[in-house]
Amino acid sequence: MNNKFDLEERTAKFGENIIIFCSSLIKNEITKPIINQLVKCGTSVGANYCEADDAESSKDFKHKIGICKKESREAKHFLRMASVAVPECREKAIRLWMEAKELNLIFNSIFKKVK
Image 1 (tube, helix red, strand yellow):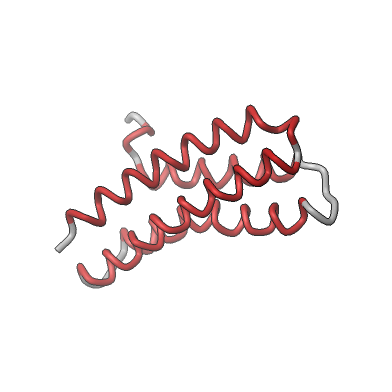
Image 2 (cartoon, one colour):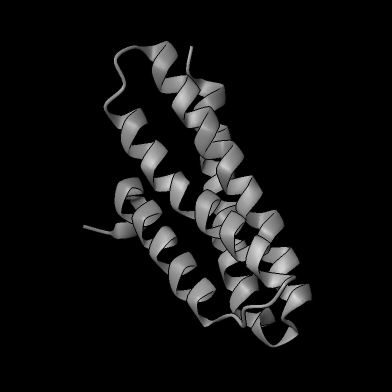
């Protein structure tokens, strides 16, 4: 199966890649809060997708997908901040940013289609 279309696997991999990325960053007064926020939102996308997948109603599903949408967008923001705080990580941050953007677009599309 192509993992690009397996959202549970894709969001889990995104979270893993965020953890690996954040583990590689230098830790100082500026980067610590950025790292903390990025780990939270980056790993939350997959967790909330799992919850959406097991939703008890369409309203619950839409709510959880909305959280996925917000968390993926927040990840984009903190990846941008990380690339400014640690310029040498810019290339890795851009790749992760692109995945966060794609996930955000996917969740936006799902959110709009749910009644």
